[in-house]
Image (cartoon, rainbow, N blue to C red; front, top):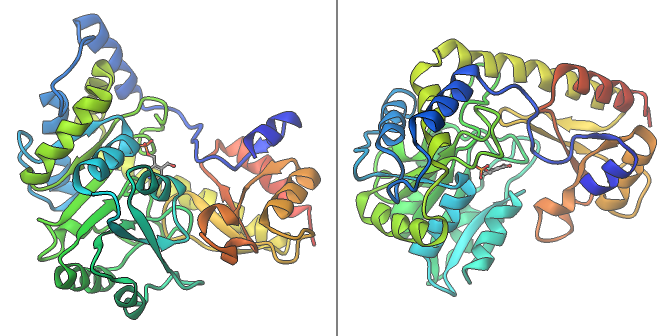
Length: 367
Ligand code: PLP
């Protein structure tokens, strides 16, 4: 869709790339680090300054106790750490439960390490998790479940009650929980992000994955991390070293500076700004007759495009692009079967003027 969008110089709301400003502290911290000589390989699990900053953030924000020497692996983004974790902890043929609509990299990473994704569908409009369905998906080969909260593409934010049910399930089946929390700071309507690892009984089996691509608008920097029990951390770190050696050294320092220096108001600002962007795009979609599934978190919205011309979600996304010049992702990208054919996903992590223009064009579609 990005290629098609570029051909017509359209507005790209397809890819999850935020074009917002990087905090000054993060840029300055990186620049100074380069001048100070942080330009070489770092330890396989990241620079101490960043692991320490992450550990204090985990305590403050996620209510998790991390020893920066043992429980944190810094990697090339959340993507790098998820791949390293899958390589380290899964064997070919292991089954891993994936909730759909899913984030494509989760599924493809599992396939890349020879694991088998087993899909359990979340039920719209609230993207409810049916624990009976989870139970039915379990076999002798089930080794893990992937959770994404707040979720891409649905915007679902798991409640404490849901996470408790999930914890019971994971404990009963004795499986790993890969918890992708990259959108942890993007939560709306006064809701709070809860880390699955903070739920009783979950700390040892959870690999909590996050990073700063989204929070600091630095998707190209490739700084992510995981928090987990030292038994798993050592193994994940080993694979991380083998594949990536380390995350970019000066960028690690810049991110550490951001974590240390940015006040709470920065993170509160993200919630407020993105909630306003969410309202804007949801209003435009409603006006166009494309019913939005209003997200509670992350920065995407799934819209019902069943009224749009086309045989499937790809043709419908292309029709919308042709008529409005706004690119979206066909819903088929988020399902293993045809359940996404009536959906497309728009990303609203765009500068106000870009989003405004996109929304005007969407609203004018009026089906
Ligand atoms: N996890 C989810 C759910 C995402 O949506 C994305 C990016 O779109 C990532 C991970 C990628 O994170 P990173 O840039 O840290 O690899």
